[in-house]
Image (cartoon, rainbow, N blue to C red; front, side, top):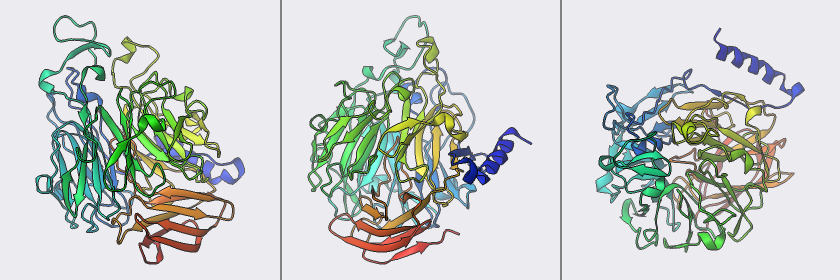
Length: 562
């Protein structure tokens, strides 16, 4: 018997005994067992082309509307000197009851550009989730034809982004029922003029190199991001009009969210060695940059950090969105705590998140309630950008384990990674990390894309004794995916709030369903939904441990995923 399977059976036995020995979080990497065989290749040949270090993300979306989440993986492309014979293209995997089928060819989404990230959104409200892919070079927009295929309509709908696109996010900026698109662009970079660097802080174009390495981002010029306004299915570039384009930063992560609780979605951007940006929405598609004023531009020491990924969530259950940003090794990841009214303080060290992150280089991150106790935990994917980092600093490793921080039910956290069973501690060069209930069992699983390596499908096999409730929202007068909707649940014990949002992490799009852990409660006494705009609905006495579909203005219906 293989060692991995032996461990699996042992843990299943322990889960059986969990009422006696207590709960335990366990995640198994079942990618191989379930035929999810995506392997990222950065196309490198030892020449240290800068784009090799960026890796790629993941899109989680139900492209065929069959009720389970499918996965799309952006792929690298051959760089000069690569020399391999295998075919590199982006991949779409269909989920067939936790067995994965490569449907890239039949779906028509096998882009062979040097791809970075992706975003999923129903831009035309026709019920098919469409796909946006960011590239080194021209981005691509695929329309979902709702027959298992996609069509490249990039040039037909007003998309033109030939820059080095990274993360992207769909959201409704003015609550008119149509999803806008925000795209972060990174730096001005050319493969043909790739600088030769001897360390992260030193480079030369000619001469003998002591040890070749990837360059520091400081030597590259940032590029303005893109904001595309959706005019009933046609995108208009309003980067300038909206106020976005005046900032030329090295953008990597982006997440929209109602930071100031005024009913419209704002935009937070994590930048690499530049000030992070917070665009406050005036409700009409125009934005005012407020990062410094609101305390989220720099860390608590007043310094810019190498922001990679970002996510938002209400970590202390006060009804306000908090912000978590992943950063470079030697820097902590940063937790910006919302004090109310959209004003933040750097609470990283205060909440136990500083010291455990200092030696890691973090990229993807998600707020997720892993143990279903009603409090958001944090998952972080790690991996250094410099493959020979030990030559420059023996304190750091290229391959790193990912991390899980457990919320102590007060908004503070403890790094519990070493206590997690299964495959969490396996080391890789991780980049994108997406959350998704892959098997529709009510707990969240994690998918990780590894730079120049095989993807991880971390299935949650934990022994949680807690209950849960899940919601799938469908807009009517608001956007079809209900992105931006606010959900408030009330049990006999307390209340929780969450917002529908597929964006966040690094180069990713996530499961649009909302799952609440409700501890030992068996029923939600009251459910309130605040749809984008002015519509509100209330439902009462909803039984736990089920998914429910709610159509705007309609009834609540249990979902049977069998």
